[in-house]
Amino acid sequence: MGHFDVARHVLEAHNINLKKRAGGNTLLYDLIHRSYNTPNMEPKISFLLSLAQNKDTLFWNISYLDGMGATALQCAAYMSTERRPASPGVFATVLEQFGDPKYLNAQLRGHSSRNMAGYTALHLAVYCGNFDAVARLVETAGIATNLLSSRGETPIDICVNIAYQNYEREERMGFQVDKAHENPNAANMAILDLVLDAGNEGQIAKYSALILRRTENEFTLVDAVKGKFHGLKLPVKIPQRPARNYRALPYTWWNKLQLVVLLPSPKTLWPCLRI
Image (cartoon, rainbow, N blue to C red):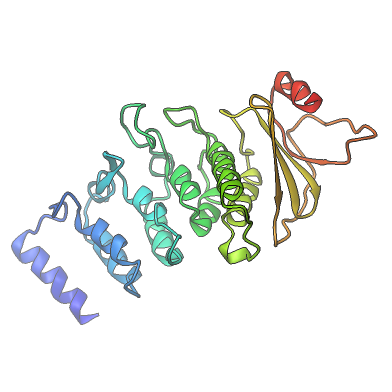
């Protein structure tokens, strides 16, 4: 704790600018980024945030994602999980300070040609498979789970897109990964389940697709536009739940599938079922 006291004294004595940048990044971003391979960064981040008289000055535009200024919450959510797990403690520390809806639902501002334009912290957490960040965000009051990106994507649209990419990759490679901790489909479906279970229900906006459950851990993803079926079998079980805000799917002699996700409009439903 003594080091924090010294840091506070230096700050007050020399009027240090906490927003000063090095390589385009602020000190807060550097601390968040270093948490990948440096333990116990949470107290340092919490201390830095306590120094600002107006925390807005530390929240906005702390670094750049896809060429656009990103917030502290967006940078904390956008922690790749490909090689090592993201630190849930770091995200929780940042979220504790910036849990107001104006922070939660802030969107990356940029031209629609940029892939991440309009992404919120939730979009980014879904995009990089940060399960812990998604779980915390959807449980936070004021979160908007259905905001559209500049390309018209909700967070669930990103899940669907990731599923397509995973299926195509498996088809090219000619094999499937069976281990849950190595299976991107399993992580993606678990995130999908979280967002669907959010208070105001996640929605599909961009893709004409259904996700049908055959058994507890077997799914079929149906693309009504492309006329494609993608089978998915997970090595882990995701709890079933009754559909709440979705139109009922009438069972027929050939249809023993339980509906999990259904587009709000029936216009894309029936052509899909006739494929």
